[in-house]
Length: 630
Ligand code: M6R
Image (cartoon, rainbow, N blue to C red; front, side, top):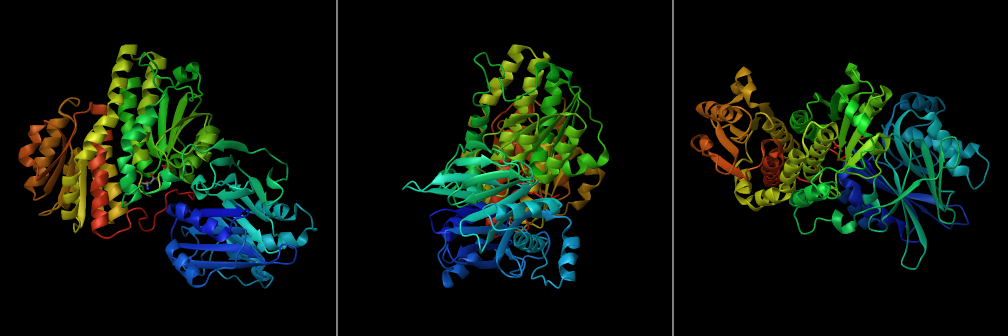
């Protein structure tokens, strides 16, 4: 939610900042803006800015017609609007009244109204409707109040940070500071990149995530909560807490490169990421299975005794990650016999869940920055529950604040719609469930080994599905003008239906609902009219009890009322044939693992429908990849 870039170094800053924004645009695309500091470093300088509503391309076009003067210090922003509409006027950067300070911001400043009143009482006129602008005025005032000195700008930022409430990453440049960009973070992401040019000149980057600078360096520094960072051409990097105490940031090397964040010949990032799913699953399994087929999850820093003491599990997450949790419930309960509750993070902490030291709270987040999930995690920790994060972004806030972490290894996911991270999350949940079963001794080693073998076959099964997607694309094109599409599933196929509906809503902007197939007769069946497309995800005929037969009946019920039935069924399941207008086949997969394969056609379907309708598949309207506000 909002992408932020900062740069200090020998390169032309505008180019570096725009390239960073291009890679961060998935975080928000309501507007974009840049500010560079210009003028002789020894004499007084000034700031040059440009901002435009809409996608980054609008800003780039404006800059092509009216370029900014050259500079080696710059900041930039790509916005997901919260306070104030997506207009030029509300686009970041925001300036102080004297235009000597420029600020970009991600998050929500909760006490902005009171601060704004304070300034307005002093006769300061605001140029935007945002919460951010107060930070620019505060920073200018704090700077002016401080004596000249090398730490003046950073100290001004610390003073401002101490006054702000809510969530913020702020990055700022000052006309009188020719060598420095400063930033602050609380409850909102910010990482630092440390690099050098080909001729060995140091350069420093700030970004909402490492994608901002991956084209220049893979050397990153993690910032903690409530910290201020200064990047300075000569002094390099200095990190302090809000009180000014110097802290050493954690260094790490990003394990992917710029090529991983390119489309690689695909029309959309989403298509590339769908194609990468077999690899994402294989990488998530890699190194986590021992020679004897046992689970080796050394990263899960909970002792065997702590794992044995667990008597209840909550899985807490949002959106697609929530669906991963719903799928996990079936397997984890079945394998461990521990009760599992799955809940959306935005509800979890408000209903006072019963948690204690023997509760395990698993939080799932691709980005590791989702504010609802982070707040739920903090609530769980405050109640002394054990916490385990399943996360795709190394060093992000959620894994840093959890007792234990299991990273999915899906690589960078750029498309707003989660695909490969989702399958990797499901697989990571399977690993956790099996590990618990192993440690607690509720499954024999050979039983664990047999399931592990099934997991190892998943990349191949998904590759097989991907080879057969042409008819699904054709089907997608034929569904592009549908007004409503319903998704049904039972047992593990129910959360898959929910995910199919979510994908369609977010990409194609078509009304879609996922239902437990058994619930149909309790109301939703009234939605069906002649020709309504209904996608039915059919559990394996080998699924428990008579689940399969019941779903076949559900297909007949909707068809009898005029539905056009699109059936996802495993190879050899002939029972569905008489009632299916279209059949999408998937390989035979063990019941509990089947969601990994049945999800894939639904991703492709949504992508194709959205593309046919002329939508930007990677950047759907109103959305952002990482939701860092509650
Ligand atoms: O980064 P997270 O996994 O915490 O994000 C959670 C949701 O915002 C995310 O899954 C969202 O629903 C996706 N855009 C769905 O495709």
